Length: 600
Image 1 (spheres, one colour):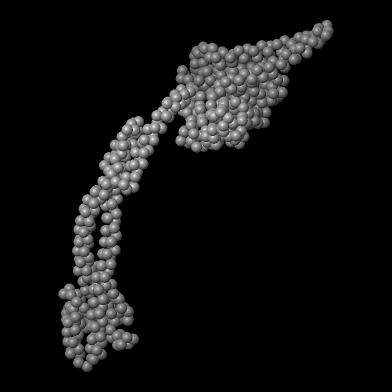
Image 2 (cartoon, one colour):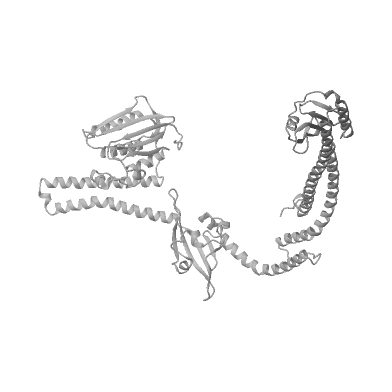
């Protein structure tokens, strides 16, 4: 077990959480307090300014209405402004209804016209106020109309600018005090948290050591009980558990060792279930066979894991025959298992579970399948000529040999069927050698262009007159390293198939070209073609698309299978393309050098 570092220990986490809680609490309290405090200070300040302005407005209303002694009125307004100045840096302006400043604590502004929007709005009867930033200083600005009574006409306006920066400075001071208080509180909380965490983590650390000792198989150590609280009760329960585990370990260790040895060295997969059919044990071999991990299968229903839940329940498996064949084959890879079942039952008591043994029988089943198919195909292929020969021989025996016209015909048919069987056996022997790798390629450098033309000319001499040959072959030499005789056999099989299935008046097209490091040969006929679903099967042994017509025109059904094996041995590739009703094209690609298995 890895040693827990300090920063990952519960001790550190407890102290960290404790301090974080204090920080969060102090921050929440500080933010709420400072926001409220700042709002309160600003409100008190602005309320005081508003009250002073209200008082000035009342006094100015009387002075502005008394316009008989203009000089005296101006003096009274100036005195009023001086008496009620808010701050040494504030600005107070009295504006008449014509937007002219009639009084101000800044003499340079007197008798000047103002175009401030806020003053214009005040002269229209709308009071406005707000805090604005002027340079680095925040200022409270107020513009209030001077009315005759509450609803009377507007005589002028009062415009006040007074710094409010001291309010924010006071808030900053309070923030500093709060920050210092937070640091002190954190220091005290951290110290208390360490002490508190130690009282909790010390017995837990002792139990951790005990668990590590128990993991090594030592059950003699006991956990110290520090107190009678919940952690103390946990320590006592831990000691009791240690004692019981020690007793159980002695009983089960020998059985576990036996079971582990048996399961580890078995070459078959083993699965065990409980009485309800849910998996409780699986060995490594069963994991490999079913491609499930123990984590995925534990607790799952056995028929579901085996993929037989539709046909079998756990009750049927208990009563089923000794084994079942499970086919997990895919299109590319065959995979067949034999599952044998036996119940876990003590005497005549109830069934406590099922033991399933999985055995890989893929190779045996494949061999058996191939054997059955081979016997069937060979028997079928031999039966037809043998039946024909028997019929003609019986006719000859019964006296047909005396007929000078029938006897030669019957003998010719018998001879043809005999040669057909000889060709079949010869092809089978050749395929058998290829399957057993009991042959060697006699590789030699040849001009493939000459070889191709030679084979085509030979067929052209013996073909039906109504079938045309079209050749797209360059006269340039094309050197290729191949087994000449076996490649001629490949070309013979492909071209003979094309001629057999070409209709009267049809055309067979030959193409030979070089692509990078390969030669590409294609032979195209104009026959009926091959359905798409059957196209990949024509290279299988004894496969025929039209069985009746194939036997009528002869052939063993092994020509393309032999061609595939020969091309594969050369490191090449053979395939077919076809459109049903329009003809078939067989393609062959062979490497031009000694590099094999590099087909694109």
